[in-house]
Length: 248
Image (tube, rainbow, N blue to C red; front, side):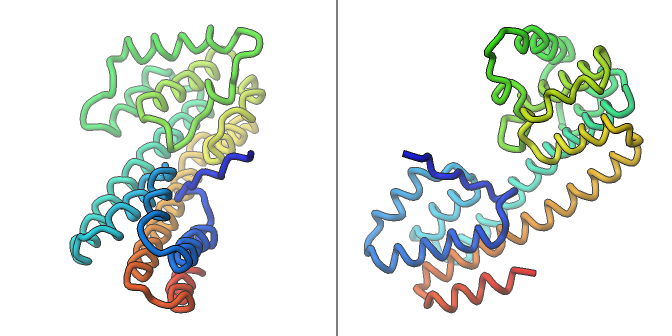
Protein backbone atom coordinates (compact mmCIF):
# COMPACT_ATOMS: atom_id res chain seq x y z
CA UNK A 1 0.00 0.00 0.00
CA UNK A 2 1.40 3.39 -0.98
CA UNK A 3 2.31 5.66 1.92
CA UNK A 4 0.26 8.89 2.00
CA UNK A 5 2.25 11.95 0.91
CA UNK A 6 3.44 13.93 3.91
CA UNK A 7 2.14 17.48 4.12
CA UNK A 8 4.77 20.21 3.92
CA UNK A 9 3.34 23.70 4.22
CA UNK A 10 6.57 25.36 3.06
CA UNK A 11 6.84 23.46 -0.22
CA UNK A 12 3.27 22.51 -1.11
CA UNK A 13 1.42 24.84 -3.52
CA UNK A 14 -1.32 26.99 -2.03
CA UNK A 15 -3.86 25.15 -4.20
CA UNK A 16 -2.82 21.86 -2.62
CA UNK A 17 -3.24 23.25 0.89
CA UNK A 18 -6.68 24.63 0.00
CA UNK A 19 -7.65 21.22 -1.40
CA UNK A 20 -6.57 19.60 1.89
CA UNK A 21 -8.92 21.74 3.99
CA UNK A 22 -11.76 21.37 1.50
CA UNK A 23 -11.36 17.61 1.77
CA UNK A 24 -11.55 17.90 5.57
CA UNK A 25 -14.79 19.85 5.13
CA UNK A 26 -16.28 17.17 2.87
CA UNK A 27 -15.31 14.31 5.18
CA UNK A 28 -16.60 16.11 8.29
CA UNK A 29 -19.92 16.76 6.56
CA UNK A 30 -20.20 13.10 5.62
CA UNK A 31 -18.98 11.65 8.91
CA UNK A 32 -20.31 13.34 12.01
CA UNK A 33 -18.40 13.39 15.27
CA UNK A 34 -14.71 13.79 16.12
CA UNK A 35 -13.48 10.47 14.76
CA UNK A 36 -12.19 11.93 11.51
CA UNK A 37 -10.38 14.75 13.34
CA UNK A 38 -8.78 12.38 15.84
CA UNK A 39 -7.57 10.19 12.97
CA UNK A 40 -6.20 13.20 11.10
CA UNK A 41 -4.41 14.48 14.22
CA UNK A 42 -2.87 11.05 14.80
CA UNK A 43 -1.41 10.93 11.27
CA UNK A 44 -0.41 14.58 10.74
CA UNK A 45 3.28 15.45 11.12
CA UNK A 46 3.32 18.98 9.68
CA UNK A 47 3.57 21.21 12.74
CA UNK A 48 1.32 24.14 11.82
CA UNK A 49 -1.47 22.04 10.32
CA UNK A 50 -1.37 19.79 13.38
CA UNK A 51 -1.61 22.87 15.59
CA UNK A 52 -4.74 24.05 13.75
CA UNK A 53 -6.38 20.63 13.97
CA UNK A 54 -5.74 20.53 17.70
CA UNK A 55 -6.79 24.09 18.56
CA UNK A 56 -9.40 25.24 16.04
CA UNK A 57 -11.62 22.24 16.74
CA UNK A 58 -11.21 22.44 20.52
CA UNK A 59 -13.30 24.38 23.03
CA UNK A 60 -10.96 27.37 22.86
CA UNK A 61 -12.57 30.67 21.89
CA UNK A 62 -11.90 32.21 18.47
CA UNK A 63 -9.73 35.01 19.86
CA UNK A 64 -7.53 32.55 21.72
CA UNK A 65 -7.30 30.31 18.64
CA UNK A 66 -6.17 33.27 16.53
CA UNK A 67 -3.57 34.38 19.10
CA UNK A 68 -2.13 30.89 19.40
CA UNK A 69 -2.09 30.44 15.62
CA UNK A 70 -0.13 33.69 15.22
CA UNK A 71 2.42 32.59 17.82
CA UNK A 72 2.81 29.18 16.19
CA UNK A 73 3.06 30.73 12.72
CA UNK A 74 5.75 33.20 13.75
CA UNK A 75 7.81 30.54 15.56
CA UNK A 76 7.65 28.17 12.61
CA UNK A 77 8.48 30.88 10.05
CA UNK A 78 11.46 31.99 12.15
CA UNK A 79 12.67 28.38 12.24
CA UNK A 80 12.30 28.09 8.46
CA UNK A 81 14.11 31.40 7.91
CA UNK A 82 17.00 30.34 10.14
CA UNK A 83 17.43 27.00 8.38
CA UNK A 84 17.28 28.56 4.92
CA UNK A 85 19.84 31.14 6.04
CA UNK A 86 22.17 28.35 7.18
CA UNK A 87 21.85 26.79 3.72
CA UNK A 88 22.54 30.17 2.13
CA UNK A 89 25.71 30.62 4.20
CA UNK A 90 26.87 27.13 3.22
CA UNK A 91 26.33 27.87 -0.49
CA UNK A 92 28.33 31.10 -0.09
CA UNK A 93 31.12 29.12 1.57
CA UNK A 94 31.13 26.52 -1.19
CA UNK A 95 31.18 29.15 -3.93
CA UNK A 96 33.92 31.23 -2.30
CA UNK A 97 36.10 28.45 -0.87
CA UNK A 98 35.72 30.03 2.55
CA UNK A 99 37.57 28.67 5.57
CA UNK A 100 35.04 26.36 7.31
CA UNK A 101 35.88 27.93 10.70
CA UNK A 102 34.65 31.26 9.36
CA UNK A 103 31.56 29.54 7.97
CA UNK A 104 30.80 28.05 11.39
CA UNK A 105 31.15 31.46 13.03
CA UNK A 106 28.70 32.90 10.48
CA UNK A 107 26.26 30.08 11.21
CA UNK A 108 26.60 30.53 14.97
CA UNK A 109 25.58 34.17 14.56
CA UNK A 110 22.04 32.96 13.72
CA UNK A 111 21.58 31.82 17.33
CA UNK A 112 21.65 33.47 20.74
CA UNK A 113 24.14 30.79 21.79
CA UNK A 114 26.14 28.35 19.63
CA UNK A 115 24.35 25.05 19.14
CA UNK A 116 27.55 23.16 20.01
CA UNK A 117 31.23 23.77 20.58
CA UNK A 118 33.51 24.29 17.60
CA UNK A 119 35.38 21.06 18.34
CA UNK A 120 32.19 19.01 18.46
CA UNK A 121 30.82 20.58 15.26
CA UNK A 122 34.01 19.80 13.34
CA UNK A 123 34.34 16.31 14.85
CA UNK A 124 30.79 15.45 13.72
CA UNK A 125 31.25 17.00 10.28
CA UNK A 126 34.59 15.22 9.82
CA UNK A 127 33.00 11.90 10.78
CA UNK A 128 30.72 12.23 7.74
CA UNK A 129 33.74 11.83 5.45
CA UNK A 130 34.05 8.24 6.66
CA UNK A 131 30.29 7.68 6.94
CA UNK A 132 29.73 8.23 3.20
CA UNK A 133 32.40 5.70 2.13
CA UNK A 134 30.84 2.26 2.82
CA UNK A 135 29.22 0.59 -0.17
CA UNK A 136 25.44 0.64 0.02
CA UNK A 137 25.19 3.48 2.54
CA UNK A 138 21.91 5.39 2.22
CA UNK A 139 23.09 8.79 1.00
CA UNK A 140 19.50 10.04 0.75
CA UNK A 141 19.36 9.92 4.55
CA UNK A 142 22.96 10.78 5.35
CA UNK A 143 23.20 13.80 3.04
CA UNK A 144 19.61 15.00 3.13
CA UNK A 145 19.35 18.74 3.80
CA UNK A 146 15.96 20.36 4.37
CA UNK A 147 13.93 22.59 6.68
CA UNK A 148 12.38 19.65 8.55
CA UNK A 149 15.46 18.20 10.21
CA UNK A 150 16.72 19.38 13.58
CA UNK A 151 18.78 22.52 13.28
CA UNK A 152 21.92 21.08 14.95
CA UNK A 153 21.95 18.15 12.49
CA UNK A 154 21.43 20.59 9.64
CA UNK A 155 24.38 22.71 10.74
CA UNK A 156 26.69 19.68 10.87
CA UNK A 157 25.65 18.49 7.39
CA UNK A 158 26.12 21.94 5.89
CA UNK A 159 29.51 22.26 7.55
CA UNK A 160 30.47 18.91 6.02
CA UNK A 161 29.54 20.12 2.53
CA UNK A 162 31.59 23.30 2.94
CA UNK A 163 34.57 21.26 4.23
CA UNK A 164 34.23 18.76 1.39
CA UNK A 165 34.16 21.51 -1.22
CA UNK A 166 37.30 23.09 0.26
CA UNK A 167 39.20 19.79 0.49
CA UNK A 168 38.05 18.01 -2.64
CA UNK A 169 36.93 20.92 -4.82
CA UNK A 170 33.38 22.16 -5.27
CA UNK A 171 33.07 20.34 -8.62
CA UNK A 172 33.17 17.05 -6.72
CA UNK A 173 29.94 17.94 -4.90
CA UNK A 174 28.03 17.31 -8.11
CA UNK A 175 27.45 13.61 -7.42
CA UNK A 176 25.93 14.52 -4.02
CA UNK A 177 23.28 16.83 -5.48
CA UNK A 178 20.61 14.12 -6.10
CA UNK A 179 20.82 13.21 -2.39
CA UNK A 180 20.58 16.72 -0.92
CA UNK A 181 16.78 16.86 -0.74
CA UNK A 182 16.26 20.60 -0.46
CA UNK A 183 15.63 22.26 -3.83
CA UNK A 184 16.82 25.55 -2.33
CA UNK A 185 20.19 24.11 -1.28
CA UNK A 186 20.77 21.77 -4.22
CA UNK A 187 20.10 24.53 -6.76
CA UNK A 188 22.43 26.85 -4.86
CA UNK A 189 25.20 24.23 -4.87
CA UNK A 190 24.62 23.57 -8.58
CA UNK A 191 25.07 27.29 -9.32
CA UNK A 192 28.21 27.37 -7.17
CA UNK A 193 29.62 24.45 -9.17
CA UNK A 194 28.85 26.45 -12.32
CA UNK A 195 31.11 29.19 -10.92
CA UNK A 196 28.48 31.82 -10.12
CA UNK A 197 30.04 34.44 -7.85
CA UNK A 198 29.54 33.91 -4.12
CA UNK A 199 28.15 37.40 -3.46
CA UNK A 200 25.65 37.04 -6.30
CA UNK A 201 24.50 33.67 -4.95
CA UNK A 202 24.13 35.03 -1.42
CA UNK A 203 21.89 37.85 -2.69
CA UNK A 204 19.97 35.54 -5.05
CA UNK A 205 19.23 33.01 -2.31
CA UNK A 206 18.29 35.79 0.09
CA UNK A 207 15.62 36.97 -2.37
CA UNK A 208 14.29 33.41 -2.72
CA UNK A 209 14.28 33.03 1.09
CA UNK A 210 12.23 36.19 1.56
CA UNK A 211 9.73 35.23 -1.14
CA UNK A 212 9.40 31.72 0.31
CA UNK A 213 8.65 33.09 3.78
CA UNK A 214 6.04 35.54 2.42
CA UNK A 215 4.26 32.82 0.47
CA UNK A 216 4.36 30.40 3.40
CA UNK A 217 2.88 33.04 5.72
CA UNK A 218 0.04 33.53 3.23
CA UNK A 219 -0.61 29.79 3.16
CA UNK A 220 -0.66 29.64 6.95
CA UNK A 221 -3.13 32.52 7.18
CA UNK A 222 -5.37 30.88 4.58
CA UNK A 223 -5.25 27.59 6.48
CA UNK A 224 -6.38 29.32 9.68
CA UNK A 225 -9.31 31.06 8.01
CA UNK A 226 -10.43 27.88 6.24
CA UNK A 227 -10.20 25.85 9.45
CA UNK A 228 -12.24 28.44 11.35
CA UNK A 229 -14.83 28.45 8.56
CA UNK A 230 -15.11 24.66 8.83
CA UNK A 231 -15.52 24.99 12.59
CA UNK A 232 -18.32 27.53 11.99
CA UNK A 233 -19.99 25.06 9.61
CA UNK A 234 -19.93 27.42 6.62
CA UNK A 235 -20.99 26.01 3.27
CA UNK A 236 -18.36 24.33 1.08
CA UNK A 237 -18.75 27.06 -1.56
CA UNK A 238 -18.08 29.79 1.03
CA UNK A 239 -14.96 28.03 2.29
CA UNK A 240 -13.79 27.75 -1.32
CA UNK A 241 -14.34 31.52 -1.68
CA UNK A 242 -12.05 32.08 1.33
CA UNK A 243 -9.37 29.95 -0.31
CA UNK A 244 -9.58 31.81 -3.61
CA UNK A 245 -9.04 35.13 -1.83
CA UNK A 246 -5.52 34.01 -0.92
CA UNK A 247 -4.61 32.77 -4.38
CA UNK A 248 -2.81 34.93 -6.97
